[in-house]
Image (cartoon, rainbow, N blue to C red; front, side, top):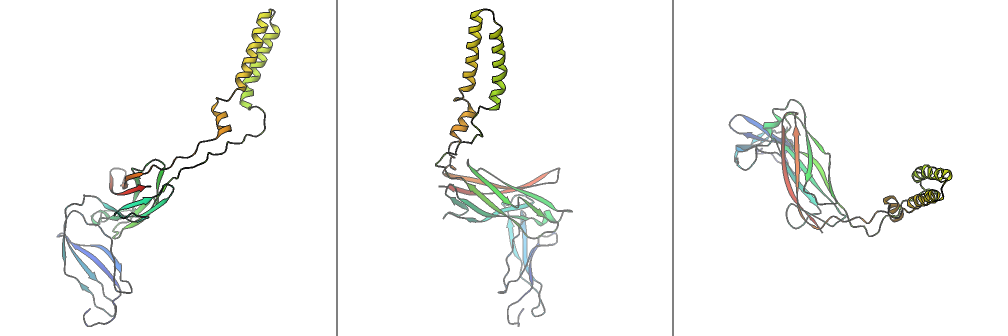
Length: 277
């Protein structure tokens, strides 16, 4: 590009010469200021990275000097999970700071390794989930499944949403019951029993048996009518209690991405800190 003036345009690619041939890890289009950003993952081992500018009608193509990179801590995964843009965030890095009842968001990026996508013959689907949440808290991902295409050289993103619950200060109103008469279920027990005991009392020839039958009938009616200890009665007259809030505290949340071809599963994960006030 020497001798040209202005801002270059076109595409730039990052290539890796790991000794077994050159692989394109990612490519991007230059912005109006002549800059480009990339998202890619490297497998464990030694790499030799170069930036390759394709050139255009004004600027000739060029290749940067190679940069040696050694990856020793990366696991032998097929893709890498990263988390960014946690909002609202705390002063500490990689931390989501919420008040009970508040919703937080973050961006999950699934970046496939080139050694993985080069072997794909059809799209692979990665499912994202989370674990370690406190009670009264949920996490959702949009989309929940990420598609990875053969020879894909860029990461795919999903929006993560963490929802907490605030304490409710009032109880829910009791459920209304149509009409004021007794429950049909109660009548289903009451009528057969009442008729049976009434017939027994009517046909009894001894006074003590008649009195016993009448007492049993009264007891049955009283039992069915005294529903103050019945769960249904309690719900209809008192309603559910107030909701409890998401417990305050500091939690380590694990975000996992997993893909399976029906025979074996591959996965990777990352963590972040959730602070509930």
